[in-house]
Every structure is written in structure tokens, then in C-alpha cells.
Length: 241
Length: 241
Image 1 (cartoon, chains in turn purple, brown):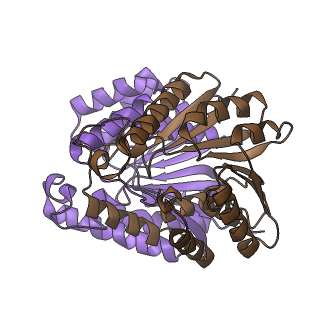
Image 2 (cartoon, chains in turn yellow, purple; image 1 turned 180 degrees about the vertical axis):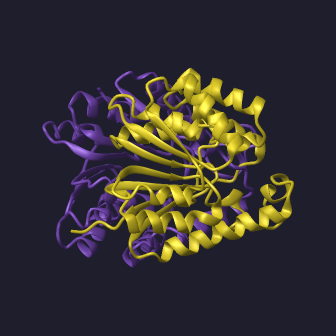
Image 3 (cartoon, chains in turn cyan, green; image 1 turned 45 degrees about the vertical axis):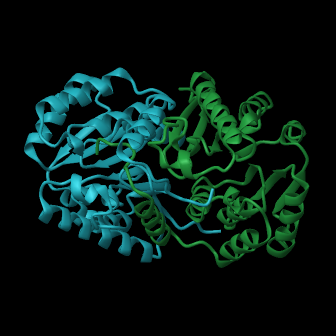
């Protein structure tokens, strides 16, 4: 069909989300348990990925036969647990990075409960510093889900140090910024509803737009901006003949 | 973020679509030319994939290093041209199936113009019959975009004849049916606006829902129902350890 993005009011969007969740391969129960625990005990649980997005992560990790995944922005460990689940058949490992001490502690608690095998490695500290320590390591999937003002730095470090495998993919999350990068007017219901702090909203939108403008001009890579969830950029190295 | 699908009114949805198009690796000019020609000369041009979806096809074919793609439902050849473009570096080939003689003719015209190298093979006739002739051939991507009442048959033939490579993917298009499978009430603007023929709408919605109910119970495969475009199911064989 000709339209790339369908219009939905809020309650239809919710119904479509639920329909997609219930018609995609189900999440293992511990992910729902972990999400509920995070929502109960920590602020801003909407910073976790959605259930549907976790279903995609499991699908992608499995589909791509990933063995090593780098997850930038652990929060409470939800996406790391999803990546691990998607690599279960092949026994792959996840490195997950977090700078906020409260969330480092939350993630560590989750891993002690759900990762007895030690397949997930939590690294605390600023992501940019941690990334530089991975020189010589290659990942099949690299997921950006941290401070939007640093995405360009993450990309440049990843490409300069060769951290992405030749057949690997970078997934950068939240890259339509609730549609605000395309329409920040009151027509966009997410402009009114979503954020309590307008200065933060403006800063995030500016960072996300700067990222999108940067990546589309970067001749090292191909990019596809997927209009699902809060927008997810898929980035690969250009394929040589 | 917690929501899997963002709500947008029609004009914001269009702005987001355009933003994603302009911030994804650009289509080659002949695809836009071909789309305009189809819209000018044939009925129901909204049966073509969107520009953004064509950008995804090129990205995916290249990302997956596909060598053979099976495209069920050629229409005027737009998706086949996108698949070919995505395989350009590796020189892969597309088999595209069409039953409507008017569209077989349209597609043949497009291929004579845009596929001098003969990388796209147009096969006319009912898809179910054509599929059976591929026994012994294996595809990296199989795209369903024909009559929704036949998707279950396509799946069963593909799996029974082993037409999908062990690392391959099936993409089944239009599987949220404008959100109608989740909410068919007047709350859904696509219920009111989209189709002139309510009987056809009901039939398509019923077929799509039956497909979604079937695939989620099929133990041979994993499925992810992507809430982008008009819904696109991604299907892979379950991964063995």
C-alpha cells in the first residue's frame, strides 16, 4: 500500500500494539516479571523497551545467529535479557553498558536472578569510555539506547575501532522521538501528552534530529529508519561487490 | 519506551512517513519513475508497496546477502525492482509471480525497461501452482503480497517443499490490515476511510486475522508481527541448538 505510516488514535494504537504482541512469538515469562518489578521499584519505567520491541530483539538475535551483542544503555537490564534469550540456542553473550549507579544496581540485581549462567556482562561507567575499551572485539548487533546526544559519538567510535562485524547491524532506538522530529506542533498528540519537561523534550528532539541528519550523510553506511515503536534506525556497512 | 505503537492523526502520520523516507538511504530514481508510471496507467496503485517499504526491501536484501528472492504478487514489478536493487552488489536474482494478465503485461513492460540484465524472472499464473514448480530451489527471502486468503497455503507449500533456506526469512505483507484486525470500529479512521467495498474489506480482514491466528500456533516457525506500514509478519524457522 502507498502509505508508509498508518494514522491511529491512542486507543486504536494500543489495540494494534496488543494484537501484534499476541500474534508474535511469546516472550518468556521472566521478562514480564522483570518489567513489572522495574515499574514497581524504579522511576521512568517508560525508558524500558516495550514488550513488542523485546519480542523483536529475540527474533532478530536468533534470526541473525548473533554470538555477541553490545547493548548501550542497560537501564534495568530488560533489553539485555531479551538479547540473551534470542541467542539461547547458540549460547551467545551480551555486554550491557550503564552509567547511572541506581540502574547499575537494578540491573545487577536482575542479572543475579535471571542470568546464573553469566551470559550478560554489565559494565558500569560512561558509555563512550567503555566503548573504547572494546578495541579488537567485534559484535554482531550493537544497540544504541542511551543519551541521544551521544549517538553520533557511539557511531564514530564503533566504526573507527571496527567494533561492528562485516555482516552486523547497529540498531539506534527512539529515532523518531514520538514523531516530534517530523511534526512538533499541537497536531501531534505526543507533543502535548508525552513529556512533563519541555526543555528536555526540545533537547532530545534536537539531538535525535541531528543524529538523523548525520547518519543519512555518512557514506560508510546504509541506513533505514523504521517507523515502529519510537522509531528504530537500522544501520549496516555498505556492501562491497 | 513502553508503547509499541505511537498514535498519530493522518497529517502527522504522513509527516513521519516523509521524514523516515528522507532519513533512510535514498531509492534509485528509476523506482520513483516506475511508481509514477504505474499510478498513471493502472488501477489500484495503492496496491504497490510504499516508497519507505521499498527502501526497507533494498536494505534487507543487501543486509542478508540474499542471492535468490521469491516475490509472490508482482503487481507492476515495484517490489521486484527493489529486491533486485538490494542484491546488486552480489548479483542475485528475483522470481516474481503474478496471476492478473493486465499486471503481468505491466510488469513485463517494466522489466524490459529496467531489467536488461535479466535478473528478474516474471512467472504468470496462479501463485499456488507456480510455487509447486520450485521444488528443489531454495530462497533467502520469500515475500507474500498477493491474495490474503492464500497466505496459509503459501506458507505450507514453502515449508513442505523446503523452499526457504535454513537462514532465510518469509515476509508476509499487510498483516495488520490497516489496524482493522485489532479494532474494526469507527474509532479506527482506516475503517471509515480506506475501502469503498465493505464486503471486500470484511473478507480481507477475516483472511488476515485467520492467517495471524494460524501462524502464531505453527510450531515450525518463529513469527514477529511488525507494526510498520500495513503490518509485516517476519517468519523464520525455529533455530536448533
